[in-house]
Length: 161
Image 1 (cartoon, rainbow, N blue to C red):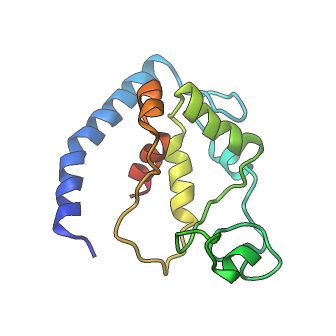
Image 2 (cartoon, rainbow, N blue to C red):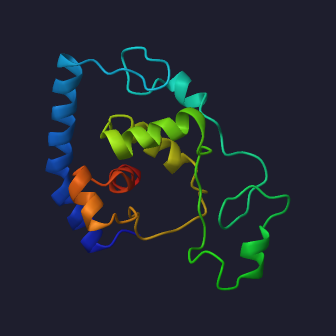
């Protein structure tokens, strides 16, 4: 269910997103995108290269998404103070290889053109039965935010929402 405030926020963000799209189109024309995985031109991350990223498959904990042999990992099953403070987590990829490279390029080099593609993959990994009111990026420390000039987690959250 959409609240009035979230609808208002979407309306406010629409011109910003339009500006982002226009900037991206001009940038693509002047500087064609190059795939982070194969180096080919035409996209920041080709569909075939996205499919080749290491999938977070197999049996995983229903809460923290760590690989496990059962439905719940030991830490989440016990539910003590060591357990995560969130209800569930999903990611489409393991943090290794080209998937790790793609995230690190965004975090430390400011290359973010591939984040919308990763965000769509992340959105597809969310179970359809999950209901939530907001998608938020994990805040950066203010010094890191100033140094980078952006928060890659906020970019991903905005794309997923």
